[in-house]
Length: 157
Image 1 (cartoon, one colour):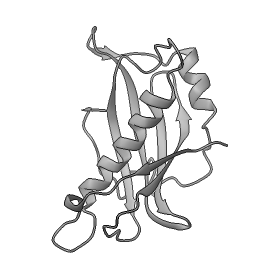
Image 2 (image 1 turned 120 degrees about the vertical axis):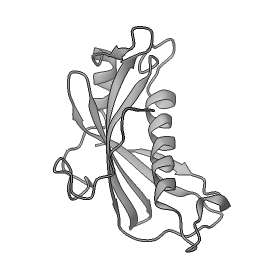
Image 3 (image 1 turned 90 degrees about the horizontal axis):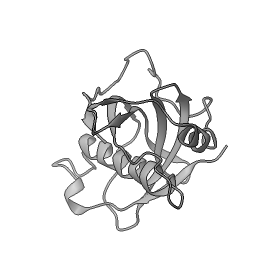
Image 4 (image 1 turned 180 degrees about the vertical axis):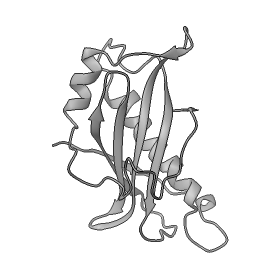
């Protein structure tokens, strides 16, 4: 199973008053990795994959350890745990080597911006997502049950 590896730069402003990366900033790290995965990596030459837009239906995130600022990027690993007809679940780990700071998942819904409504996943998109599919590793402990979840409300991806 392949994972998308994104070296996410850390910014001084990511820290909060307690000297570690603020919980909300982790959602930005996930967004940066997801955008790199779906909108930079996925579309091939001349491909329309994922170009119409998407919305976030749900986030779940487990904060495992505090992360403090440093000059080296933190690694965000991204993979797919579910592909439906009109949504996908993307899982993540924010880590350094074997140290995992966050495990999270996001339900992403492809969206037709012109028609103003969700759309189905295309065959090309499904083929791309299935290359990163693994439903056995790293989902948040409450995945699907709402435990420890930070819900997003149809926020633009």
